[in-house]
Image 1 (cartoon, one colour):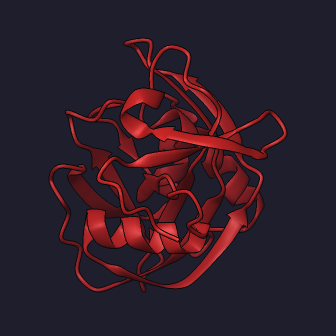
Image 2 (cartoon, helix red, strand yellow):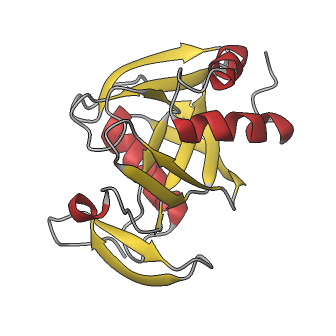
Image 3 (tube, helix red, strand yellow):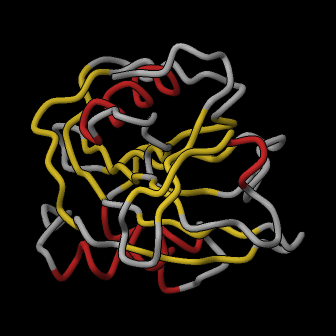
Amino acid sequence: MPQTDTAELVVLLDDDGRTIGSAPKAQVHHASTPLHLAFSCYLFDDAGRVLLTRRAVHKRTFPGIWTNTCCGHPAPGEALQDAVTRRVREELGVGITDLRCVLPDFRYRAVAADGVVENEVCPVFCGRAVGQVHPDRDEVADHVWVPWQHMRAAAEFGWAISPWAAEQVPLLDAAGIGHRD
């Protein structure tokens, strides 16, 4: 069930990935970020290219960095697939077909240059974009469709894309995702 409060909440987790509560997103990301639930999504077009986005420069975590198509947090009680569909529509203005969870157990911790920590259980989804991209500039500074091999090359240089995408790309490769190139 989606939240009705205006404050975006994130689902807090224990070390075993069990829900232990929720907290306002604005209060969660700091130097001691608690483990919480998130998701990553990679969308492909009919040519097999993947949509990369550049995070808005005012974002709290990893501002201005290039990353996968969309990341976000499900609201308490919201199904992950519903959250992915919602955030992709809100951030990029596109729909999704063939959405599937390809890395259900992905978990990472990353520290930004300013000391802000991401600490997430972050299942990874892939799907196909439907429609033209119309990004919300409060979320996405830029976007580009690239062949998967460009994403793979960016992941080899950890500084070129977000730390979570740099970790996810080799795992996606191993799972056979993006091999239309």
